[in-house]
Image (cartoon, one colour):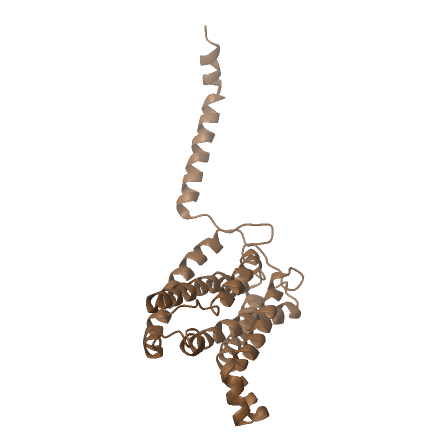
Length: 266
């Protein structure tokens, strides 16, 4: 069977998914740490009440993500552009996702507990929706990168491995950075740096690199997309067939000799 994908395309697809998975795998731990320890520090809000509310914040965001998965899947299936059906979601979705991800870490200066809780619910749910709009189409890219089913299987398998590594790596970034800083700086200096949020800054840079790797999928020269025409449903085929038969019968009757005689009869 004809092969369509270069080896570089398969690996680029895998590396791209590794990048976005690094970000989405790192984001929950980082967000939890930020909300719990830094967002409302010194505002007068009881930290224990924030900690209790975080379970509801992440649970609600999970529901939002599940709904978005269904909606985005429906929209992607019906997307038809000159760039393809999946590439536009990656190229035009990564910027809003990055902006919302940054806004997660710009907490309002407030001592109002209800306002703080509302902000956490809204901003993290928006991030979850933005991430779904990018990550879900990217995960489907393997189904459109080649008409060859064997190549599709290879691409999806390699991408799944890279994605799993990215998610695991994302969850390990923050602890790993803290461990490395402690080994380099020493315990006392590390505590000072941690209090200033230096470990969060370093881990942010690591995951920003992952986001850059993800954008590699967008360029047509790195990974191509083959649009496979959708098959019409059985109902549509039946209706089209009925319409064709009806038109054909009308044409034959209209142009039959008997019809011609009827129209020319005095």
